[in-house]
Image (cartoon, rainbow, N blue to C red; front, side):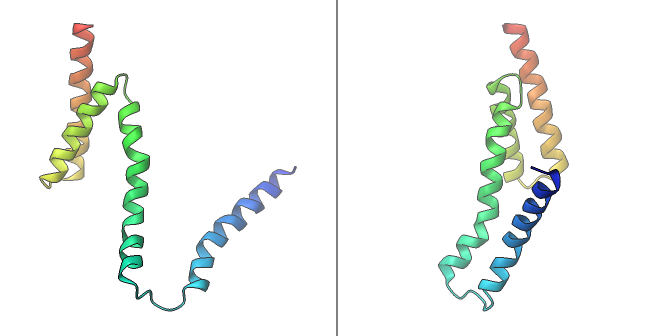
Length: 103
């Protein structure tokens, strides 16, 4: 099959995913349950994609878990994104060095 057919198919699929909701739901959504469900879908999808990557992107699952704990604690305390990211990276570095020393 031609590469152009693949590109056309993906363009059409992407276009339909964005256009169909606008054409089907023309009126404002009044259901409180549906509105709250749609509000939290992006957060749930992002979490489902991010958490496994955090735990498996390092050499050890222990250092990934340490970074996750540090990130959650700092984010809960309202620290900025750069502070959370740098602190999580430092936690991975420290835990990896500790694991190298003891193993």
